[in-house]
Length: 585
Image 1 (cartoon, one colour):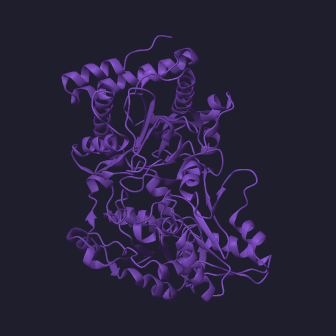
Image 2: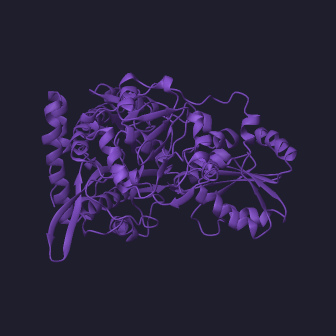
Image 3: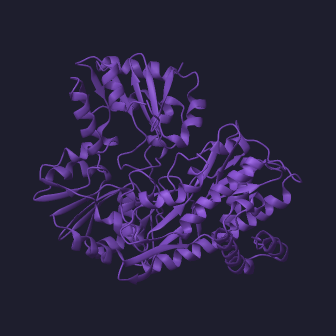
């Protein structure tokens, strides 16, 4: 049993509390959190990036999505924590679970800084029907975590206009032009980073600083320790009349706002929201869509970043395919090799997320992370899935390739082909303006659905510009993806197949939404590929493919060779020519 839960329950007794909710979040609703906020992982032992832990007096349960079912089952074994598989028929919501397990008058606690206002309102409405009491002002984790890491405090650096495309002042003017209230409260750290062209290293693989901001019609404030600021940013703040306030001062300043205040209830933490005494206007922060639609400079720079990344990835593929079985290599050593190849490219900053390097049955764990305990040797057989990316000053990349290291089964070959068909269909898609990710998702999944197969994750997510590798509002999934695609949005295309205990396959490019023909029917749109790395054709069953799919792949590989080969040595170039060979129909 988990000893930490026993200690935690003693603190619950002191507060006369019957349940406590621990999310995977920080004060800013950040997807990937720094070590200070890894409370759920600390208490449960489950290290996936998404999950919510509910601790009761006798029972505990953890909710996570399909990406982590296999990983969570393994990591929670023997902990006394039940796994709740989100999206699976029969799995209760957290509210339903609490209502079912607690008596009327029971107290449920949480730290309101770690939950959005919208989430808290959902909990309150559901729990109130059973007479349960929700207390949102207790951080019990801090009481029992003796060596809890401190909040990050890394130096900032200015993200120059040659990469950002627009100055801080231009962005402030654009935000104010859309602002219909007296104030806009910005709590998402990637939005703050985008607005002020400010970057840092507070969170691994997420080059931003933990900060807040308030933009008013005639002034603006950023909430960050000014000792962290680089000289260029500090000078620009002064020139643009940006007030620098201490990070924690946001909690007192929220109470001083007057007039009307715009906040996004789905992102602002509940504690901050409930400090506002002015008139609240709930709306999506306009910055979210502004940063999603990349400007001309950002697109040009991103294409340069992808070319650099393509060279590194192609060199890695060459190294892997020509050396497996000849030299010692493991999941972790291959990960290190790929990092070194990326780091050798000019203007590399860091990996854009922790590399997923999953051999054979590990590939079925969608977001598998190799460790000294799970690391395995790569052998000249089976499939090796590598999902990785990099932050460069020019842009952010995210790519998955599944490599054939040697003989594979006929079923693996068919699955490899079906998944690539899904990928190609999405890259080939054309649609009328107004279509959303829910509609495009069905195009992508059809080849798998034809074989009664599916994958339990989205087909695509938005990609930030040297920000979060996952950003909204654009996404491709068959549920909750209702935002129409706009020109300049960058999205991943990453269908997959995962057979537990056997293998995993995923094929991923980044794609750019562009305008196509406009006629009497309206504006047609499509995708332009940004990623230029060969797919491993050694895994294909060409007989499963349609002629137009083979044509697309041959054309794509011809462009890969044209773009990447000038940056390779003679041996790598010769290998790439074979890897990009034209397939007969």
